[in-house]
Length: 76
Image (tube, rainbow, N blue to C red; front, side, top):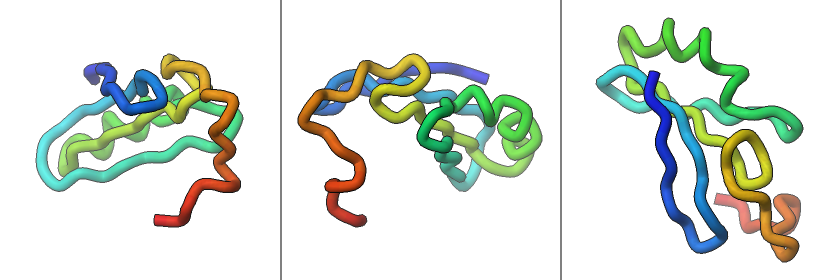
């Protein structure tokens, strides 16, 4: 498993990834981090490129800016 960071306007987001193929993104619960998926990623990486980001304010990502409220973010 590898770990990396990506820059977004609000700061740096940490993520873990493993495997090759079609991507599958694993999103953690609000009070957790991508660490909860380390075992699952090993299994999923046999067929997929498993990617698990840490949301801002979680895990190894930068703290969430004060003006960011997830409940007010637009739906995708």
